[in-house]
Length: 543
Image (cartoon, rainbow, N blue to C red; front, side, top):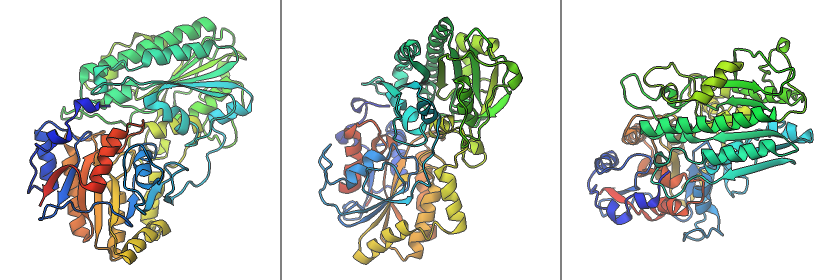
C-alpha cells in the first residue's frame, strides 16, 4: 500500500527525462530516479512528432487479459460504465470490451472464459443450510478473500453469515510503516464473535505476513509475524477459557522462504506447505490425533466434522481427524484462524517465521495435534510446481475440493487450439478490423502472477497476427510480487521482443499495478492509469 502523498506528482514525474529512450530504458531511468515496479509512474510511448502512441479511443476493441478478478473491476468500470462518475472520463467511448474471465457480474463486458458453473456447497453454504450462524472477520485488505473467494468465487452472503470488516490502516506510504496493521482489532472482533451466543463458526484472517512480506523490509516482516502471533495468543486464550475448538491454518507460504539461494530477497509466495493445528478445548472427547499430511481442501470437511455436520458429496477433501482419536464435544464453537502467508520453512536464515518470536504459535504446535498441508501447485488447482496464492488458498479452504483455476483452463485452451477459436476474441478483432480501429491488450506483464501471465498475452498476439491485425497496442502493468528487483523492465523488453518475433503488437504504455489494479475505491490511482491509457499522460519515451 502507498499513499499518494508519498509518491511523485505528475510534475515531479516529468523530471525523469526519457525522451528518445526505449520503454525498457525509460523504466530503468525511473529505477535510477528512485521508482520501483509496483508504483512505477505511467510511461507512454510517443511518435516522432511527439503524439502519444496507441491511446484507447472511440470505437476501439480492448481485451483485458488478467485472470484474477477483484483488482480488475475498477479499471474496467472506468472504461465501460456510461454512468461512471468517480472521476471525469470520456463519455460514450463505445468500446468493444472483453475480459479474459468474469471479474464482476454487473460489468457490461464480453467474457471470453465465463464461469463453468457455480461452486456449490462450500463451507459457509453448508453451515448456513444447517441453520447455524457463522461470522467472518478480516481487515479490508483481505475482505474479498473471506467473502468472494472463501464462498467459492461467489458474491452470495448466506443466511446466518455475518461479515466484520476492520479497516486497514490508512495514510501510510507502505504497510511496513505499521506492520501490525489491524491485527489487534481483527483479534478483538474474532473474540467478540466467538463469545456471542448462537454463533457456531468464526473465521478470521490475519493479513500481516502476506501483505508486509511483499515489502523488502526485514525488521517490518519480523514485526508482522510477531503481531500475528500476539493476535493468535489472544484468540487462543479466549477459546480455551470458553471451551471452544481452535483451528489454525494458512492459505499459502510467503516469508518462510524470504531469500533466494543467491541471497537476494524473494518478496513473493512459496510452494511450501502450511500448518494445520487443532486445539480442542472442549474438555470432553477431545480430538487427539490428525493425519500428518493433507491439503487445503481437507480443511472444510474437518471443520464440518468439528461442527457435527456431514460434508456434502461435492467435498472430495478428507477430514484430517483420525477416526480412532476422539471426537469433539458437541455444540461447541469452532474458531478457524487463517494466518495469511504463514508457511512452514526449513528454519534457515531466509525463514523469517522461524526468525521471529512466535511463543504462542510454538506452544500450540507443541501441545496439540498438527499437520502439514499442501498449498500450491495441483493441490490448489494450479499447474505443477507453481507457488500458492491467497485467492487459490481461500477458495480451496472454503470449497473443500480441488478446483481447477482459470489459468489451468486457459492454458489447456491454448494447447488444444480452442483459445484461438474463442468467439469473444474473434469478435474483438473482427470489429477492430472492420471499423479500422485499434485493438488493445492490457494486463499484467509477468511470467507468473495470480493476475495472469505473458503467455496468455503472447497467445493473443499470435491470434492477432493470424487475423491480419496491424494496429495492436499493448498496455502493460508491472509489479514485483515474487520477482527479482527491477524485473519490470526485463518483462517489458521480453514482450517487445515477442511482438517483433510474432510480427504483431507494440508496447505503448507501462505503469505500476498500484495505479491500475486497485480494489478499495482509491479512484485517484485509477484515474492516473485511465489518463495514461486514454490521454497519454505520463513520462514520455521514444519519439
